[in-house]
Length: 62
Image (cartoon, rainbow, N blue to C red):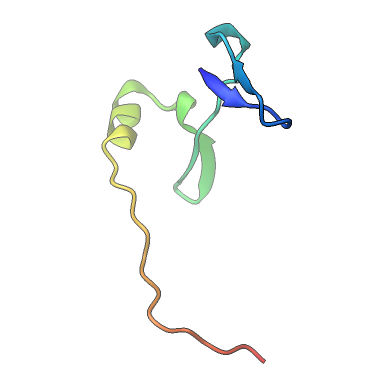
C-alpha cells in the first residue's frame, strides 16, 4: 500500500507495517467491535447497505 506522509512524499508500507482498523457498530443499544461477532452476524453486517439521509430543510440559527 502506498500513502503520502506529512511532507507529501510517497511512502510504501508492507502489510505487516500497517495498523489494523477495527470497525465498531451499534447493536441492541450499545457498541461492539464487528470482529467479536459470530460468523453469521459478520456475514449479515457485510451485507448491510449504507446510506445518507438527505437534508429536508436548512434552518437559520440565531
